[in-house]
Each structure stands twice: as structure tokens, then as C-alpha cells.
Length: 328
Image 1 (cartoon, one colour):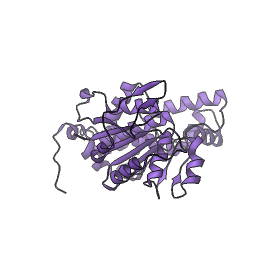
Image 2 (spheres, one colour):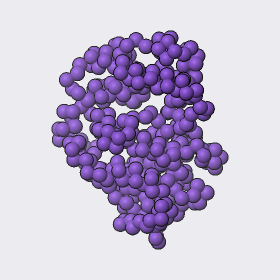
Image 3 (spheres, one colour):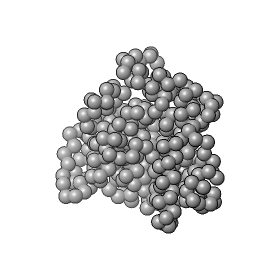
Image 4 (tube, one colour):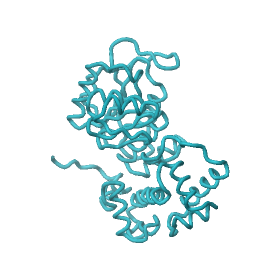
């Protein structure tokens, strides 16, 4: 990641929270992590004064030409979902997409990517208030209205403001591994990782006692991932029927309890794999998969790579070793 340039877009009526999250993740000095951190810069989407939400003004030091060499471009919202972005900006985004740069949007920023045409044929998300409008206006995009964020490789879109922070932490984890992502989240005093497939909001309120029992169950499962959990055992611990447990888990996390547990186990396996001293069989046991074959199957399905390849890329020894770029 050395010399990886992240460029945040500034525009008139800038969304300050989304912009601030981007700055917090990529612009702060994080030398204590011991890994090459990002370079960060801001460019103006258009000429003229840039006023930001909250009554402040922003001076962006760079013009759109900076996007020509950006490795990651973050669009922190957009001032009006119904307003067409500047043509020059859309052209730069198309060119960046063609050369393989990573394009990221937070909340209404997805409308900028959609207008550039780079989301055609892909999945995307946005704030639930905008999801129907996005789907109607751009039928070539598969809109996932409930997702926190959607990772399509070089294009990542996220929902409302707080989901943008989840997406940005996801990028750190993708670039540097789970351990570094968790340390950044710890510094932010926020949850280390929320999967993109979790629901944006709870469709209907849970009864207070059910919500408390479900939260207690989730905490307990995270503390005891290696136990042989079943729907019946989880429901009994939460003092719910299996049917109620399934329903409440779906409302709270956007997935069933088994799917949620597998994702938690994969996240734990990532942490364990970053220590090269932990044998693969022990990783499988501690993460609750029982066998290396089960670990490999679920890991590849959710991470799109093997545990061995992940370890080779993200183990402590690899992070501290000098990187050698191979030709081609």
C-alpha cells in the first residue's frame, strides 16, 4: 500500500460528516501501526467557492486532474440526488475506472457513480431513502436497498453516513488485514467490523426483553465461537423459540443466526491467520469450524481467497517484511 493515493472529492454544499469520516480514516498519521499508510489529498469537483454543511467553507488544494493518478477515489455524498454532476467530473471517473482505480461512494454519492455509468451491470447500495429513486433512474444497476455497503471489487458503495464509516474500515481491512482494521476501529472507538450485508435499519422494533436477550446471545456467541452451536442451542440460550430467534436475528442483522455465526467465525479466522505461528488446524478449531476443510470452504466463499493465501498476504511477518513488486 506504499504511496497508495486516496483522493476525496469536495463539492459545493459538501456533506461534512461523510467527508470527515474519509479524512479520519485515510489522512491521520498512523505510524504506530507499522505498515505503509495511505497518501491523502482533496480535489475540487468544480470551480468556485465550496461551502460545506454547518456554515463553513472549504478550500480544496487540487483540481480534477489529481484524479488521473488517484488509486482510490472517495465521493463523500452528493448535494442533490436529482442534480447532474459536472461533465468533467464524470469523465475523470470513467477514465479512473478504466485504468483500475478504486471508486467509493457514501450515501448519495452513488448518484455520481451512476451518472458516470460505471455502475451499469453491477450491484450497489445507498441510503434507504434514495434506493427506489436510484433503481428507477438507473435500471442497469442492481440496487440492494438494505445493505450497509456493497463491494464489487474496484467499486464500493455504501448506505447512510455511519455505513460509510463501515465501508471505509472494510477497505482498511481489505488492504491491510483484520488486525490493522481492528486497531484503526479501536482508535475510533467504534465496532471493528460490520459485514456489508447487514440491514440498514430494523424494519420493526423488537420487544425490549427480546432485544436484550438477543444482544446478550450475540455477545456470548462472540466469546464462545468454537462451541458446537445449533439453532436449537442458540434459541435455548436466548430463551426464545427457534422460529422467534430466526426472525429476530434477521431483523437485527439482515441474516439468519447460522449465516451470522459463520461470518463471525471467518472474521476470527482472519485475525488468527495473521499470526503465522498458529497452525491451520488450530485456526479451524479456535474459529469453530472443526476441520480445515470446513474452514477453507466457508473462507473461500466469503473472502474469495483461501486461508493460506490470506495468511501469506496479511500475516505479521509479511506486513513487516519489505514488499517486492513482481513485473506485470
